[in-house]
Length: 404
Image: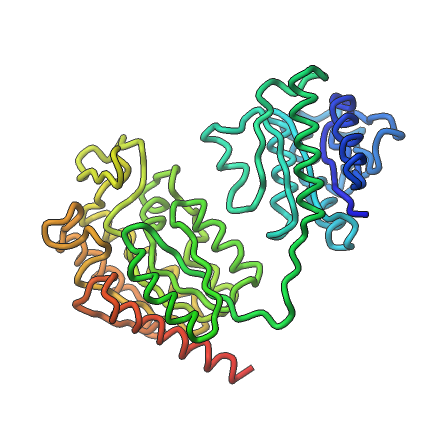
């Protein structure tokens, strides 16, 4: 029987969690209750007490009563993360469930983020649908279900939502996918609509060579997910052809940033990577405050991006070079001087060769000599250019495999 960690404040939400766990049992899975409340719930109601969780954070539950709410919460969050991580490491849980408002969402999602890709994670939250949810989910595969109403007591709506949630998480753990032995070498690739042709050419070539190429949408969450999986050792190589998330981090655009780890994972894991600053002729946002003087680009029907100016491009180019200089494994950078996207062409919405040149010069001036540098007059979406990058990555990975 599969076991699901049920993490929550059983000192205040025992009734609600009890209902969910009863429904889980009806679906043939075993709930394992973890109390993260700062006041002990009845021991009979939980499998792991809040005192045990506090101990994993290096403290005692009684000490938390004298702390501020924030400090006590931080301690329980730390303990919950360690608890879940240890349970999974010992093979004692196959999924995790949590629910709540701001506090419950923060704590449960933090615990969920410690678990690797593929472990079912379901969060029922009052914050579902808000912009803040991206901060809780990050680059993980957490499933979020809206609670519709506050999670306070049992009524016709909460019982309906909780029952559906129990069915979802039970179905997820019982629908486990097992990777066949001897899987193909995996390559992470980044993509945008305006770099799709080039990435597709490269992807098809690499697939013909026997690799599994998995693409990520470079919208912030996509880049975070890609970097996290690289750090976890899921990938054997990286084809990073779409990097507008670098602008978002450097220029302070929170809605589309992938954070400071973007373009750092391959270096940390010492795996081959081929990088091209595709898509850096734009930066995604819906809030143009502070960027009013930049040219606006509408990818569909509404303003969705701005065109970084020459100074923006220079700053991001310096940062990108610094990230890539951390590489110890094979790393190659390709500069498409004929354009960074489908619309970075003469007459195109983001065409600005002077700004592009600022990016290229910043990269070239700051890139370590250990990193290969290739310049081309072609556009990123030219088939021959994309195939050149794919072939170079294939060479790197073939050499890497031969030396191991």
